[in-house]
Length: 147
Image (cartoon, one colour):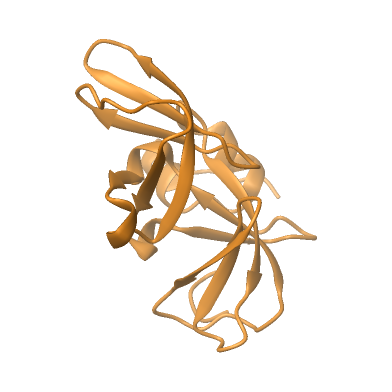
């Protein structure tokens, strides 16, 4: 399904996983996910399942792909985080830091400034649930909230 629109529309509301991954640099992170039993959460599979509250309904047990843009993720202390992961690599690009996790799948996090983290260190990742894009696993079409 092709999508037309201004670049920010494609960036903010991609119609499918292909468009989501095509727009933005570095590209969107994609994580296997499943709708939570309570219908209000989703379990992200980063080598182990970690559940997050969505603030809207999703069909329990539904196979999904979660998408998160690297610039929408913040590194926080593990005890206050939505997700916990180990650091894989850290790349300083001058004004920004690109951190890649040691999880499966890997996540890329982009932050302004120089974040001092070491490979193997456990960090917390946080984001606004509104920035999480959910795609139906089989069709790869983006779900709207409450769909």
